[in-house]
Amino acid sequence: MLGQDPDAAQELMHSWTAELSARAQAAAELSDRVATIAASATGADGAVRVTVAASGAVTDLRLDDRVQRISGAELASIIMATIARAQAGLTEQVSIAVHDTVGVDSETGRAVTDSFAKRFPSTPDEPDRWERDARNGW
Image (tube, rainbow, N blue to C red):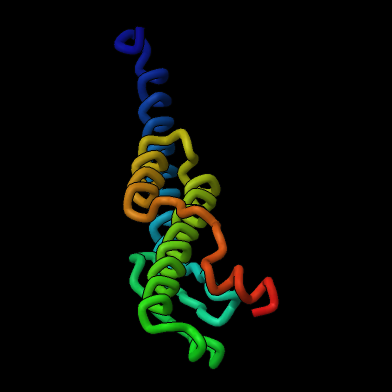
């Protein structure tokens, strides 16, 4: 029993302290990595490009001149779908950062990946009508 061996108790305390310190350092590294994550996606056969920050906020939107051939309503739909795909890419990148730092099986890792998966679910990677038409020589 630990109460009978002061050296064993002290060694156990040092071990716990080292483990807690390592976990805290890994969590801080994860936080730093997540803060710098960004993801991009394209739509309309590359005519629309969206980049989002780790928060999911759009940080860049680029529209090629080809979008002039798309109706306003359809362009809005393409942009929104492209934003959703970019945001889903955040979840993938966060999963990698979790794996590399705190581990996917840790409580922290599960909490972070679950949070991103709920906020930014994966989207079907289907081409929009404009992309299908462009591929068919439209």
